[in-house]
Image 1 (cartoon, rainbow, N blue to C red):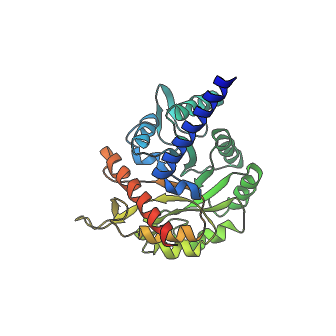
Image 2 (image 1 turned 120 degrees about the horizontal axis):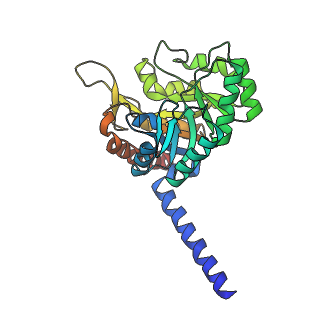
Image 3 (image 1 turned 90 degrees about the vertical axis):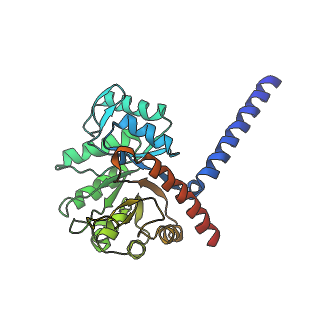
Length: 285
């Protein structure tokens, strides 16, 4: 009995030590922020490869997107229409990689039956947020299903002139729903000529997820592209300060749409900067 107690205590201490190390590496976790990556950042690779790359960046959360080949010996794509047996295979794949799936998108459906299938998929996979851009006509149904399944629908903003490019449109679509909010893509706001901090303020209390990026115009084509966080025009430190002020909780997906063939090192550097900036912001508030 003494040996059993000793082994239990040793195991507990090891677990607490691992938790402490993880908390030091990812200080934002304590605030309920789940920094991970949108697997679309690795769209040239399979989902299985994306999980490996996400882990190599020091991240433990993934947002899956439907068009990605699964890989890892599993046929098909990460589509929400996959059958129950394949979902079990995918869940095992994710677990074996030491990753947690927190979001899915950007995804939509046409009919109520298809939307219900999407919610069933999210429920089975343990997804917190379905990131989507439903039409205005679909919103009453989407709000109803979100309430029924107790799963968030986060309205995502692509650049102007897409449906939710401006926060005012997002607020109107939320219509007071407890389970509908914003998936704030700060890079796309900058591309649309908007100030990301002011956009977050407009959405005060309604931000339930993030597509996180930093962007800059410094190439001959004059277009914005992703850069390491903290080096672009997205006001990363002020953004984190505003999220902290709002007591934001939810998934933050790194979405790096540049240097597609090998952007892992830039995502890893961005995550490192994120942790440092978060620590600085926390100390100042």
